Amino acid sequence: MESIKIGLLGLGTVGTGVYRLLEKQAEEIKHKAGVNTVIDKVLVRNISKTREGIPTEVITDNPNDILNAPDIRIVVEVMGGMEPAYEYIKSALMSGKNVVTANKDLMAVKGGELMELAAQNGCDLLFEAAVAGGIPIIRPLKQCLAGNNITEIMGIVNGTTNFILTKMTNDGMEFEDALKMAQELGYAEADPTADVEGLDAGRKIAIMASIAFNSRVTFDDVDIEGITKITAKDICYAKEMGCDIKLLGIAANTDDGIEVSVHPMLIPSTHPLASVNDVFNAVFVHGDAVDDAMFMGRGAGMYPTASAVVGDIIDISRNIVFNCCGRIGCTCYKQLKIKKPEDCVSKYFLRMQVEDRAGVLAGVAGVFGSNNVSISRLIQKASDDNTAEIVVITDEVRAGNFKDSIAILNGMSMIKKISSVIRVYG
Ligand code: NAP
Ligand code: HSE
Image 1 (cartoon, rainbow, N blue to C red):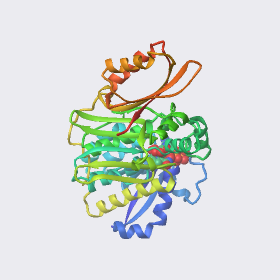
Image 2 (image 1 turned 90 degrees about the vertical axis):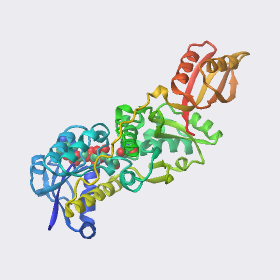
Image 3 (image 1 turned 60 degrees about the vertical axis):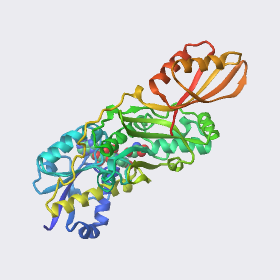
């Protein structure tokens, strides 16, 4: 075989990185894959846009130039979004083309169906870039760690929110100011909803949990909370307690089902994830044989993401050369139950303003006691104008019981305001 032809769907941040990296590494890739790889066509939306360094003859706005081209063996989808990416990937797989995608939105919802389609057609469908950009995690989970029973996987998998929380921690900035800075630096989108509301992290933890526990977890299964309510004051109090606040995607495989969530959490400053700052991502895995393992790096950006996509392209090229595509497909061979959010357990940090008078602490303790919520620490922080600020840290409690307690506290006149409710890891 002389060369393998590739069709690129999308030429934005990631697509441009993939194009340039394949060009720059062409000679190396020939040795690593045992064959030349050549980008034959590139699909874009706006064909009249200037694309520096890309020959005009490879650019098209007609998807059929790639999807119906019999000699294109690998389709790389880096357009993003659900449609038409979903239809294009299905079409590629049904005509026997191998697919690489960086699309977490799609894989977190339609991953099972697309992996099944890939298997039916004897194709590879690889998606290393869909989780944590340049950090290798999908392939390590499916291959290097395959000898483990993985019981927990968690991570900082959104760079934008990690940057915001780092600025709030190190510079005492409030959320809105840190978000503005992230937007000015080009880390956060003009519409930052998917990042700051935890949706992007939710998609990534769903994909990782499916592979780690060999059982399908989709985006809808993830209990998601973003970072918009976190204040600089919460971070100061966390620091006093020896903790940092991080947005963590966490999945645990427990005896009574899979717990999967994204929440801002207090995490001990001594935990390796606490020192992962700025736009960096990290994934922490616990397996019965390997014990703890952590993977860290850049979760986004042109070249870090292209690094993962090109790794997948090289892998598929080797499989084409050895005629063994579809060798490692879907690994979800179990059907484990997903626990309801209210049945999951966690420790909690609660900050509230209460009337500064006798009987208030007893009242708060009474509500928790009657809902089976055990208090680990209760600290009165400050008082003025007959108002005291108290911070409660609970032991591990069922989320439903904690939520019931909060609903009762909210209705009590002695409680002036509940300012923060944040989960505590560990
Ligand atoms: P982007 O910069 O917005 O680029 C999207 C590209 O796709 C553009 O070239 C656009 O064409 C093309 N496109 C979009 N819709 C199209 C359609 N309907 N028909 C034809 N072409 C279409 O996006 P990106 O940041 O590169 O992200 C691509 C994918 O990688 C997404 O799934 C994203 O979640 C994932 N990802 C991105 C990063 C990152 O750091 N950016 C990291 C990890 C994963 P025009 O150029 O004509 O507009
Ligand atoms: N928006 C994501 C982040 C990068 O901030 O990490 C793409 O997954």
